[in-house]
Image (cartoon, rainbow, N blue to C red; front, side, top):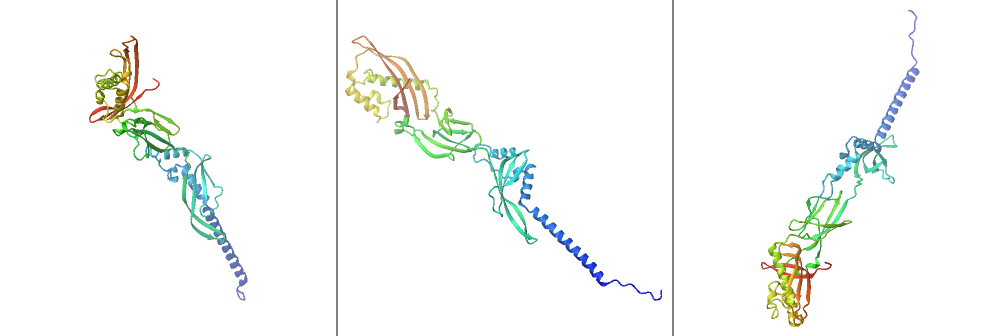
Length: 373
């Protein structure tokens, strides 16, 4: 069309539109940056790490999440402590809270709970940090440590037994690893110790038990030994008695009768020396010295009587301490008819004899009166 002019768009309007779109895009970018920064900041909070840890435990990952040490003793299943702990977490709701007084921003501490019951303390550690929006720090965290709360109170025992006894704890023998080095002599063996090595009391210390153990003590011949328990102290209550061989029983009884006859003047040759007694004692025994003093100074005072008659003889309480050491009780009643008066005098012997084996022969190391029987 003749004379028609082309319409021109004002430059100002174009610039204005460009400015508006630039502004929109800028703020969109800013908002996107802020949103991503806030999302990253929120995701980087240590609570998110704890949430993931709690969820892992709830889903059965407690063994991996919480390192529970094995038991500290060799007398129980090494996984007993761990298994009990993990069983206590099964099916429980796991929650957490920041530990009161935890102010370290780089290593915060949290408590874990199973149905409200504390099960562990968790320390987190910051591994990286990036500042965003000039004022916020986006951090990365890892678990620095997890300390389980173990409810089971460990048990321990001090055990006192003769050194040649065996202590069994849950059918496992204690050995030098449990010995403390403390020891003491057994007083009643003091004279036997002059001739042979005698048992002495040793101390075992066994700790870290989770359950009350099955305890058994055996002597050196494999016989079970009775014991007492008071609190955490176990002490043997004497060694068990055994059945005595008839030949040894007769030998012990005859020795006791001969010893009694010596002091009543009825042992052949006993009025002239102690030689008739020498076979039953070590050569340097103080009992031979006592017998000699009696023979020299007091034997003459014993009333005249007819040949004694022994009654109610008994050898009992035979206890073997080792292959070359034992004790037994000897009881008998010795009836003597006095020649001058016609009266019957009864002398009761109730003694404990301690025998040791020297050069292949049993000899008396000590003898003591049995009290209260």
